[in-house]
Amino acid sequence: MFAVNSNPFDILGKQPRWLLISEALILVVLIGLVDFQTGYEVSLYVFYSIPILLVVWYAGRNAGLWISVFSALTWSTADIIGRSYELDVQRFWNMTVQLTFFIFIVLGGAALKGQRDQSRARVELLERFHTLAQISPVGIFRAGLNGGLLYVNDRWRRIAGRDEAEPLPQHWTAALHPDDRGRVEAEWLRALGERESCEFEARFQHANGRTIWVLGQVAPESDGLGGIAGYVGAITDMTELRRLEREVLEISEREQQRIGQDLHDDLCQQLVAIQYSAASLKRKLGSDEKGATASEIVDLLKDAVVRTRQMARRIFPVNLDQAGLMSALQELAVNSSRFFDLECRFECPQPILLEDNATGAHLFRIAQEALSNAVRHGSATEITITLVTENDQLTLAIRDNGVGLCPAAMDTSGMGLHIMHYRSRMIGAALRVERHPEGGTLVHCTLPQRGGRLRRLIEAAEPLLSSRES
Image 1 (tube, one colour):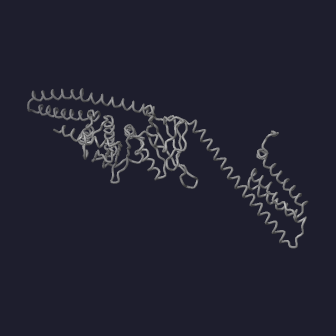
Image 2: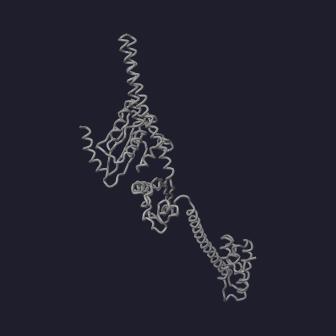
Image 3: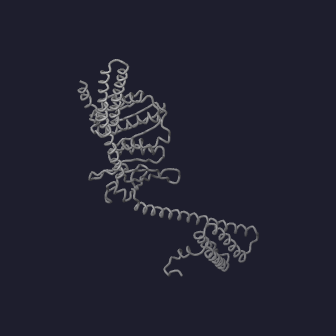
């Protein structure tokens, strides 16, 4: 049984379809009887729309069409019995007009019901989205066409370090770390022009100085007409993962340092001692055939000492001071030319200083990994390392003439490429690995420098380098 205070329309909606149609047919018959009793002077055809609309609303458009046909026949029967026509065509015309009117009622009711259902579905979807967004472990936001923030969930506020009472930034990139904001906005604008989603890694800086690393993605939101209504995005807190990656990288650096020092301080010294012993043996043997063999051993040991020292420097270069990056890259090019038997050049049109030694170390490792990939995977015979500055941006480029990387190797699935991308993110740089139009591979790392700091460092580098040369 239905509750006394139930909504009548809810009761109709809960009835079986066959019962609702049966009730509508009975209602049509009752209206027809009343219509017959009132005579043709008083027309009740408008009241036939009541059962038609009820059936359309709760049983569907097709059922409403059948009820409209039945209503037209009922009205026509009541009209024929209570009224005589001189011509049959008049009776047929009136019946056609009524049926057309009832069909319009069906179509109009179905259209209204469709709009109601769409609005209700949209509201339910928004409520579902809001519930999922509130319990989601990732930060979710929506932005308008111009990038202005429209909605953020609680997780986004916690990641961004913003209280609930604090107003939202005008643009979704405005909450990012100043060193990452320009890079991420450039990536978003590029994806915007291509109508694609944008993936990025950036930092949020809280008021207390804490830095949060996030992995984010922004995708266009369709308006249902082929256009873009706005953008939706999600950010995931990657701070703990970045900390673990940094620890693994630091352990790797320390191990490389230890191996490099062992090669230089232990193995090289042993080889040098053996070289002196072989030289002493050469002098004792004189110039006969055995002496010539000892001389050959001395030459081989000299070459082994040189190669071991070069290997040690490749594994762990000297500490990078302000001007050390240029020296380290120049030495990397020279040693690679000798070690791999290829032509490797370093080009730096103007001297460049770096305030942060860690930044220089990361850039050196990126160049070292790119050069190693060019030799091992690209079979390159010519490699050019370029370090330039333009528009307050430091750019490190490594180009080779090899076979190029295959599309499957262009992603970050390989350990070497993954580490290169990670190092670039650590210093706030953007890294691109792509095929060069003229052949080979181009590794392009761009590091933005704010406030003209890089320009001042370039000017300060010239007297420092001049003093070194003198």
